Picture 1 (cartoon, rainbow, N blue to C red):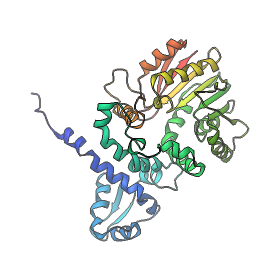
Picture 2 (cartoon, rainbow, N blue to C red; picture 1 turned 180 degrees about the vertical axis):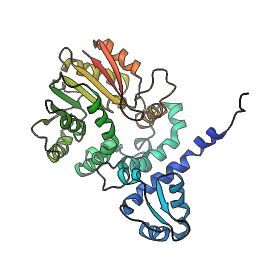
Picture 3 (cartoon, rainbow, N blue to C red; picture 1 turned 30 degrees about the vertical axis):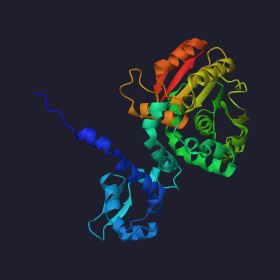
Picture 4 (cartoon, rainbow, N blue to C red; picture 1 turned 135 degrees about the vertical axis):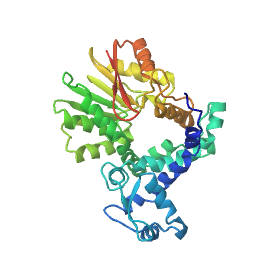
Length: 341
């Protein structure tokens, strides 16, 4: 006997922004960083966060129920402390911190997503420019310290996929790699650490180069990871056996996507590979919710930019001349789409 329709999943999603805002707020106020290695009562934690007494215990217990905090004991003398995940990913002092991304979500995208209906009706972005301000990236790229801070904050969100790619892809027959839009050089660094025979190049705009050099030096990899600067819409890409683009292609419309794919093809030798790392949408467009939501986010951010499936990637690369393709799952909703010349 089939069960009757149940509204639970509808209501869970409809109220999802409540839980999202609780977590984003906790990261923004530095709750997990304050709790690093400590156990505090709600009153003690609220005092350090400068919260009104009304926040205790509801805010902290909500995080416990959501499994983002843990608690020893009950009542007013109970002590709150970080879960292992909170300590690793949400403490700002952790090398695997991903809170920078969450802070951006809270500061920017939470309010811009309120204008999704307008984006769907008009096809136009709903970001700072729409509200009469400078675009986020225009503002960032004009201020090197802020740009460096932002890119550093984004490292945690990319690291798990870059590590997975470095582990799963067969680099044995390749000698050189160029990471296009390399930012801090993270992908090149993670691959170089695991594959000593490779020489890597992190390619990005000139303003980014000193940031990448600093991270490469900190990793002690200056002898095998270099930087190159240019505009990938105006300049040829550096030649390499493998060209990677981590979360780059989805930022652009189809015309610009095809420009980047052609540029990669021209820079690769026969047998070389182009790799796009994204929250790749499944070919049937039925399963990867995060990939589909990311594509809607590209509408919010840029208007005509969009995410894509492995089948889309194969079709575009086939038009340019690539002949063999594969998709490698990385972590969570993300995969590497690979095209071989």
